[in-house]
Length: 530
Image (cartoon, rainbow, N blue to C red; front, side):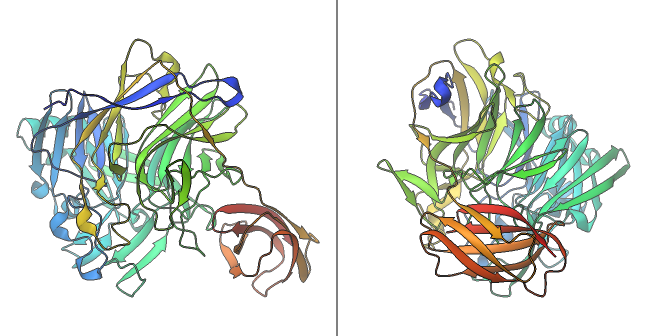
């Protein structure tokens, strides 16, 4: 049943350089009776209908290892949802081969729809075959339109699925991108065993500290991949459970922005700065910090070609920072938030973050998906062409599912009963009607020098330090692998000199040194060791 009232969640005008984001966005909740709540799923769409694959039916996972990610809450059905007619259909995975069934009921799969094919890689869940929780080493493809039609008409769909197995695909919690006819599997990790928050030996975990590019041949009966190239950066690309935002860069090229994610190698805190990534490589944008969204949530991206501005919107989710009575609060438990925020890339590549004046209707958005209205004009990577929107009000897309919480920190407080899988659909509407909002200062105030550079044995870190109490450092080779990392204590305010001695692990060559201040600000310099 459609709820008739519209929740007008924000009105936005950006005053940067005297210009504006001259649009109003609003959310209208839609209720479909008996629709199951789902989070952390994969989706495809065709002709107004959605295909929902995998994910979980419970709330946030419990802390004890013997009860985390119970198989009883895996989504073992395929769902088809029509948000316009407010109907849904379901069919069990049981007609598919066992290996396909097991992967497609997992959580945090990496997925991307290209044309009429949904590509799904990895995912984490209990496997009866392995008799354990695993990250699945599979690539599965689904013909979306045919599968939707078969489920709606109660017909067999098994002929529309293909699967191959390769350990390169054993990744969960990353993102799958598609650019210039190649796939990019970005970030994530391999996690096998039962989760526990204390690092006890109930699991093994390996971060995918980079991204893989490759081509996929989806010929019927001959699914395979080729030309896989791995790029590694164990400092800046150690990311999982983040948002990968499609971008149009100021020079007109297409790419993606890695937004936040977890966890740093020395400090168990989220990353705050983004990383730009495209066919030519990647650039960590450490001069800018994003404070209001740090885990995977519902998001959308829009490009204003007239003013050469890229707008990225984040709906709720989990964040290390949020506003309380006008003050920015830091909570290192990374709570559920109601925040709706915007990050804009200007024509000069400057990034700026804005808190939008109203919020989500509850602690929602975490592990939800924004399903775009592809009837609107968009780029190959699904960035909406903002200047083509006209008229009084336009349906931008939908937010579906996710984890809903009634408290900020149910995981830290072991009150997971406060959470559940959300079954609400929100239509997201856009129209012209601006109001002013405030800008958040995301500038990085830290700098350092290495003296001398090139380095022989001893060297000095000269640090311009406004206020940090803690400093971590990494030294990585040009291959992206960390050769040395540590935590430095007794950091004082002001400009200081810190004497370092070259370790035996550092041979002759060029390295990248990164200092991290209070787990928030990253600064990287090139250092030559003779």
